[in-house]
Length: 596
Image (cartoon, rainbow, N blue to C red; front, side, top):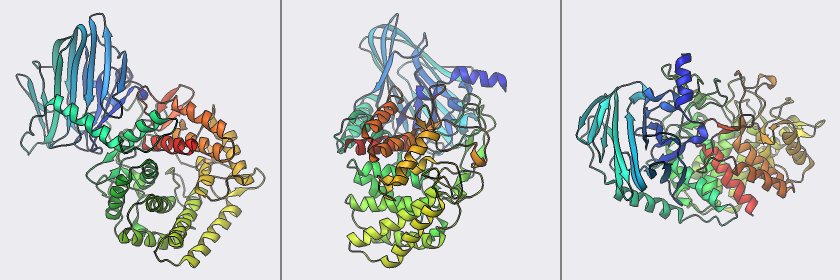
């Protein structure tokens, strides 16, 4: 195992070395060395056919790069698109590789176009298809310039403009690209029981993909000072949308660690109601109402039935069963095991989710989303459930695997649920027992202020009776629970800043404190929570400090504007699954607020 882990370190890049490709149904990660090290087909949560990210090259990858090797000289997305241009400058000349996934047509495709810029550069393509998360070696045939691969339910084809040959269970192409040359490679997947999909012209696909993304971004209404960062984050959030259903995945990957070598490795390729609610508020604030409508329809399908059976997350299609499994044949990112698929947190009770969804649906209504009677009935049912459940202990928004507790944030979000429903009745032509709701809202507020506040330290706490803090407390002024200038709010923001940061960046909570999450090890600072601190500073009258922190966070994005879940200030590295919807929606929402 040790030898395999060392090979993994040599093989995979840093998390921030990866750029995202996607077709609104799945995603790929390509490194600065030109290697696609992660790709699940046909959907975000399908088995990976390239899993080198969590193992080594034998677990599947596809590299197109100069034969001399090495990292690229520069790379960037074309403006307002998810088309990636990667440039190498070598002793023999300059070459560009254009990578993208066309929005899904008949089948998923990965297109790689090699363009000669100057000189004559020897190039190399190295492809290893390994289905079922790098576990299954397919049967491969080479016919001239085409490869076909077959393994159980999976079939794939590589169309190449140059001859292919097999060696050591891999497929290679060696060729030289000269100034003005444009060579297009297309990898296509299809269920093995279906016929081969139609051929894709790589150059027509490029033009169509550029047009798709630019047309979509034309709807963006943000006009503030951080336009580049906001627009890139909005594109990233759109790329994490599963177009057939309107579901939004939390991230494109599984098991990228929150601590290198640790066990905090989770599968984020599912639809968390909380993450989706935050994301849609960011999209709504920037003009993308259609996405909110699609998500509302997904929600109505996913949660149909008894509100008490609401899950915190669902599959892309709204499925409920997400059993958590470990994949022992994968060595883990830089030896971080176990590698997990599925997520056992789907069975947790997290009371804040009901409030998050109600808050999101209220925001959608305010933003102009057409009234829907089924949606209002669902909201009424949610609130009926909260009325009887808000006093229960739960697992909290951070999905702790320790004992259930009376988390303050969960109570606050129950308050938010009642507050938003009361406002909706007051402002719209809908009915509801607002007098009863007002009474419950007041009870929740009174209990939180009595049980979740430490008067000696002048701060709200993580849970009732705790001395610990929670970054989610930074949301209190934004949610309207108390005025931003209330001394208890200012004291809470100051306490988080003083006790829950590393080098100025915010931790979710202290994992070692009071055994709150039941897991060994620690984690990095949480990107989203640091954006929350920037918000809270601005709301409490320290806008200049909030802007300074926000711009520091922008500088932590990778070279193509992407953020993972966490950042380790000691090693100056991104940690956790990537790209993370939470991180990018927090960037968008904070930029909107600071711009205002």
